[in-house]
Amino acid sequence: MTTILKYCSETENNDDDGFDRVPDSLIHLIFNRISDIKTLIRCRSVSKRFNSLVPQADTLLLTVDRVVSASDPADSALLTFLRSIFKPIFDLVSPKQLHDSTRWQKSPAQILRGFERVRELHLELPSGDLRLEKGAVIRWRAEFGKTLRGCVILGFRTAATAGGVGGGDLVGGGLKMRVVWTITALIAASTRHYYMVKEVVKEQEALERLVVRDKEEEGTVVMERDGLKECRESWEEEEKEEAVSSSGGGGNRRGVWWRNNRTKVPAVRMRMRHVPRLELSGGGLMEGATLVVVKPINGSGGGAETEEEEDVSGMMAYGAFGGGLYGEAVEKLLKSRSYILEMNSF
Image (tube, rainbow, N blue to C red; front, top):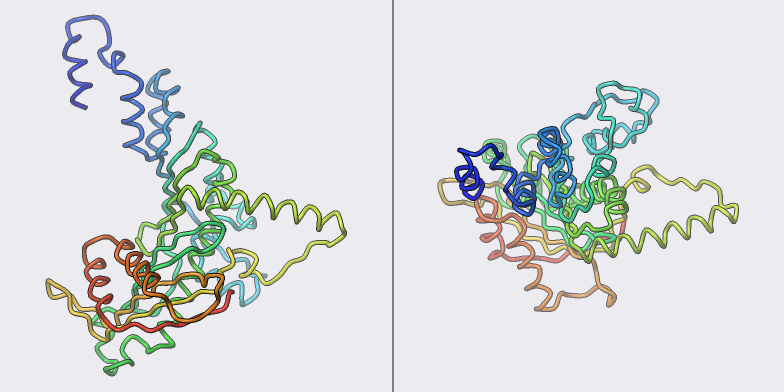
């Protein structure tokens, strides 16, 4: 901005518009720093020059802020239950809501067609996907390629709601509750990956990084360049197989809704740590604090993690939530005893 003001001051006594002397490369940098697509679309109406430069922005933030919550009365009890868990995502993609005038009429992929070459994209959903019991808090971060590559989950109860629960392992619901938290977070991540990623990644061939998060900062799905490439190659193979299957008279094979509408989670190994009462600086307190690092089981099958794999798990956890309250909680939980659980694909 200092450079722009300098250009303008040099020509304030001339008839020329000082802003016209600002190079395109600098305006392009400013647009990338703005990143918000709604703001950039408004910028297009400022001038012909802006109208031509805005589509060249390659670092974008798309905020999804209009969803509806109408539920089809003909839905099954299972579908209604799953909608209650994945409501924000399901409302975005359910074709049954197209007649509703309050619904967003364009998908993220359609909006992004107005930009020439998107390299980094952040999608922000209006809310989280989980519907937990009162007082429970979960934060998760998952990295994907064609399927899950790793996930870090932090769960706890606020001190006010956990005060009446017994001590020891019962605080936070015990092992069963912590496993439920883990599975719920993995389903949310795989659903978000399936719904919000596929169409965008297929169309945006220059995309190098994709982040799908929510305003409540509940969960984040991240895809880096190699994961995006892996996805595209995998989907191409799937489309070929589906074409062969259809031509062979295989028909429309439909399975259970919650399996067909999310990415399959592979067999995983979970390193879990738990502290009944975790005291933080500033007087903060987490009841039943739980840290879970989830990684796919490699080709060698089950068995204990190697020391190198354990170090990688620790690095994943450290980098998942940054600093602040959650970063401090992760740091302290990593010093506690851990145990390993394994889960089949689902």
